[in-house]
Length: 610
Ligand code: AGP
Image (tube, rainbow, N blue to C red; front, side, top):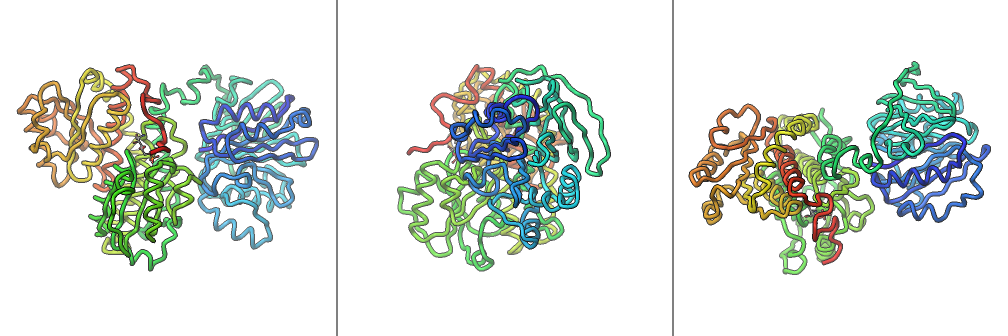
């Protein structure tokens, strides 16, 4: 997720754009850049680091009369954070510049063709192909038509703005899959990723739709579809304040990030599924066929929520790919004397890519000659850079300390990895198809669960005064039980433990009474009857039960005080769906308890120290 801003009007574009980018910094902040059109000359500055770094090098005095420009604050997806990978990106002759938020899925194919036509690329980004494509068509077409023609070849998601040095009175913007809003001012126009960058200048906005292109001048605009048919759209007035806008109207970043999951799960599998072959492509792993065939054991190393994702990986990869898996706490792995041998593959999981224990454990394994991969969210993070290969989860910045969308994106990537490994072994086309077809449907199923948030909020109120919780699950739902307990612990400060459901009889059952709510993850799977028995054991001791159950399961209401339903889906995908009610339950309980949900006491978003 990146932040983009375009301005055309009567004010100094450089100052206005930098100030607007600062309002979008929550969307991404690993690098930034600006281009300003001064009487037919383009002045571009780009810097790695936060916007303050870019701000410090701009000579505003020399640019004060330049009133057209574009700017970008980046959350890297392709190409690590650096000056050269920062946006805007330019064409061969520095006549065109572009800023972009999204992922161009077919950028490699396009880049190959464009290089063949003699285009020279400067960056490692996917975005740069678009400006060279426009350059190609602009030889024969006006700017607007060249942009439309170029976008007809582009696959993936974009919110973008293009500026040409030859037309300082025009900006062209387009949207498909990434948000873009047009701020309609008095003798000035702004184009931005969201209204937080616009509201200081105007509250009159037009929300662009997918497949729409807009030609913007300071005193007007024209909106088209990709066939260049004119489109009329209503101007809307914003009544939000800035603070709530960054959270898109949600009370906390955590809730915003929980509700972003349909989009972030989509971004995690976008461009990586070959449905026709029931296969998966994860080029970033940089593993040859021989490397794959030499894998005898996989060791996942992580901390916290990421460790829970590793536990899900153990269940899925062992069941479907029949490869032995170990899951290690990074802090333990780095200090004990683990037995590592040829054929071992270490995979670290880390949202931040900076967790000290995980980084140290990775270095320990590398020092022993073991190949190490990384599943991370931050492009260019230390773990990403030091791994031999890996997969980015593309969840965008996760601001809430409690990890939510990163976890479901980690699991999404783990499902992709499972299918990739399994289809190289015994998994049939049919089984692979079943998983991947359900994975593609998952974002809509997640929305179904999110629509029950009010019911979950009511349940949370009933139990927000409790002091202890137990979370129970069997099989691949056991790591979900651990994750649900961690969410509750870290944001509501209620003591909560996750256990394999059957393990309850070996001690925890002594805790059960009417003051101990028990959350069961109880999907209709092959061990459903066993989990029902565990629920009966809790009921017999007056325990109160909240059950996460498969939709249309009419029996479970006999054993639970509250039931939250999730759609039926392939078993391998259950952890992604079943965790979402637990995220919401912990969120609402914490809110009822007046806790600081986004920045819980004693916690940090990334534990970069031991
Ligand atoms: C999860 O909600 C916590 N914020 C914490 O357990 C986190 O998962 C852990 O610190 C690992 O962080 P990482 O994924 O960035 O390595």
